[in-house]
Image 1 (cartoon, rainbow, N blue to C red):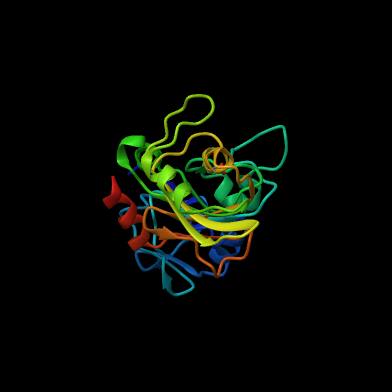
Image 2: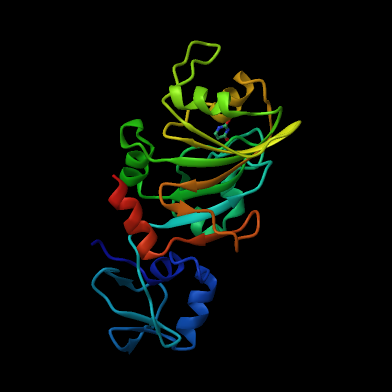
Length: 240
Ligand code: URA
């Protein structure tokens, strides 16, 4: 792999800023193949060099994957004049790595959103051919019942003629307001909202809780993110 500046390699983990890397180098706390690095702009092949930072081996990853617990009020875009984007919730060191959201959640939808800079895998996961399940929790204004589950399973036709693939509607509680889980294999614009509205139950609240085999990490507060583990990125690779 092409050589890169040490501060870029170390900061790409998201744990230290470039300024902190400089300070670590000054204190002799970064070793490259066992020898203290002298300058933060020294260049190394990140896949060939063994780096340790404060005595701990540095795990370099070519691509970055993060799971964000998206709050309402943020657009799933990298930049947008209309308001804050999910990128605004990440530290600068990660923003610099060219992360983008894997698919979109509406501005008012919360929950699991992946961001990465690994374009090929991200696009493969989003391809309708891959059938990656997405699960949403919704609170809807209306009493949903067995007939609605059958309509979802049969593949609904929306008011504009769009033919949905079969989907799963699971009713958690039914009343004047119903709580449901919706599992989709596609992701057309406002799809969950449109499907539930077509059954007479407009969505009041929507949260994505699962994508493929990744479940929203409940230890993440809204607006917070964490890196995916190696095992989690492997599980995504296996899906495609
Ligand atoms: N379906 C919707 O209606 N909105 C989302 O944000 C995601 C799925």
